[in-house]
Amino acid sequence: MIDMTSAPRRSATGLRRFLDLEQQRNWLQGKTVLRDADERLESLELRLKYVARYEKLLRRPQAQEVLEILRRYGRDCIPIPRRTERHYWSVSCLPSTPGKALVRVNASWMEFFSLYAEGDGIRALFLVHLSDFTIDHSLEEDRVDESLLERCVTTPEDVGFIFPRGEDIFGIKVRGFASIGKFLKSRRALRAIRAFNLTHMNRGRNAYQASHCYSLADHMLAR
Image (cartoon, rainbow, N blue to C red; front, side, top):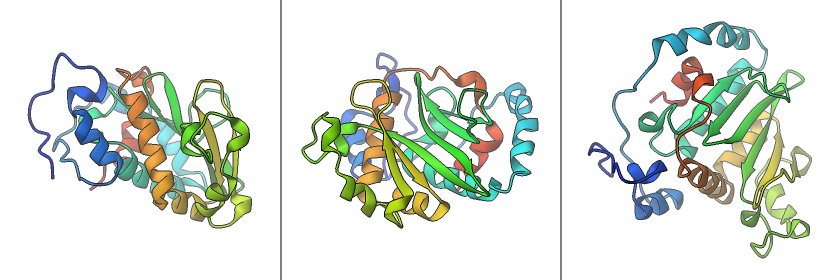
C-alpha cells in the first residue's frame, strides 16, 4: 500500500500533486492499492444545501440501486477519493442539467458518469476514451468492438453507445443494475473507466465543486 500522507507536490497540477505517473499507471492497471486520507475536508454549508434533494432521491424506487452503484464507483473508479473530494471530483444529486439524471459524477469540466431512472430500475452512461473500445485502438467510430461491449454486460440488449462531442470520447449506455455491476467488474471496462477519469482529473480543479452532494459522497467514500 502506497503512503499518501506526505504533502502535495505544489508545483504540479491535477492528480500529479498527489500521485506521480508511475503510481497512477500502477493504479490504472490494478497493480497497487493507494492509501487515501483518513479525514475529509467538508463544507457544512454545502452539505446542508443539497440535503433536500438527497432526501427526495431516497424516496425514489431506484434509490438503493443508485447508492450501491455509487459505492462501487467511488471505491473502484476514483483514485484517492477522500483526498480529492470536491476539488478534483464531485457528485451531483438530481442535477438540473439536461437529461434528468438521478446522479452525476464530474471532474474538471467533464461529466463522466451518470445514472438515470429506467422504469423502477436504473441505466448508466459511462464516458470513456473511444480508443479503448475500438478493435485497433483507433479513433474511428466504425471500429467499435461491439463484441467486447457485449461481454461486459449480462445480456447484449443491455448495452449501447453514443459518440459525444470531443476528441477520443465514447459514451457507453448500460441498462439494469446487474449489467451495470458486471460492467464495473469487467477488467477491460474498469481499466477504461480509470483511464478516462485519470485524464480529466489531471486537467486541474473540478469546475462542479458548488454542486457537490456530501450525502451522496458519504456512500461513495464508505469503508
